[in-house]
Length: 101
Image 1 (cartoon, rainbow, N blue to C red):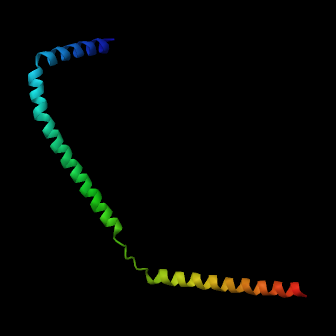
Image 2 (image 1 turned 90 degrees about the horizontal axis):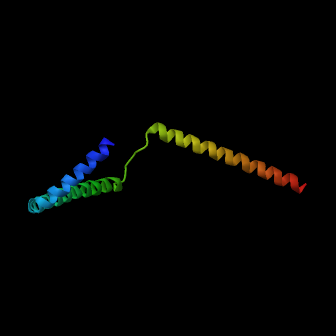
Image 3 (image 1 turned 90 degrees about the vertical axis):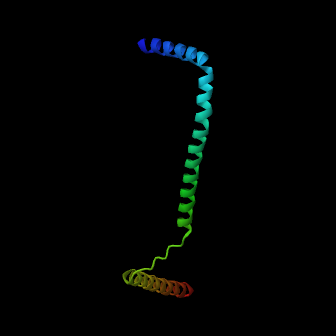
């Protein structure tokens, strides 16, 4: 309840102060708005520049060269897949020959 009463008193005093000091309030706005626009524009320029720099970095192709161990592992995996494919091919030929008989 105390907070509500305090808020009402502050709002009434603020309204009275705004009415009685209208001209100084406008002068304050005249000085404050350009500063806010200047700072906001500077912030937007900084954020835009940072975003553009990040986009340029992400567009650069990564030249990752695989190590010898990775190449050997990939070659071994390819050989295993090739051997398995040959085994399946032989089983398919056996099944076809058995079906013809």
